[in-house]
Amino acid sequence: CGHPGCPAALPAAELATHQRECDFRPETCECGVEVRAMDLETHRATTCTEKPVSCLFDGCSESVPQREFDRHKASCRHRVVICDMQGCTQRMKARDKEEHERNCGRRIVQCRRPGCEERLPAKDLEAHEKACEAASLQEEGEKL
Image (cartoon, rainbow, N blue to C red):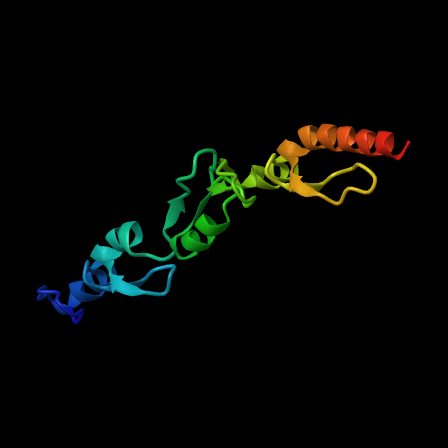
C-alpha cells in the first residue's frame, strides 16, 4: 500500500482503491495536524485545537474552539468575580459587577454636608451626615 504502518499487500488492480480508503492514509485535520485516517475522530475528540468546547460557567451557552477556551474563560461574562471595593466580599457574575460596584455599600463617597470633607463607605454615609448635621448645629449654637 505504501502508507506507513499498513500491512496490506494487494494486487496492483486493487491498490488505488485501497489507498483511497486505507485506515493508515494521512488525513489533515481542520487544525492543520496530519494524522492517520483511523485516528482522525479520536484526534478531533481529544487533542484537536479546533475541537468545540462548551463553557462551564452557569448561564453561558457558548461553545468555542479548544484553542480559544482559556481566553473565553478569562473574559466570560458569566464567570464569578468578587467586588473590588475594599472590605466587600460579594461574589457575582462578571456581567453584574459594574452595576454592583456603582451601588456597593463599601464604595467610598464624600459627605454632602457643606464644609465637611469626610470620605467614607457609602453604607456609613447616612449616619455620618446625621452626626455631621448635629455637630454643625452645635457649632452654630456656640457662635450665638
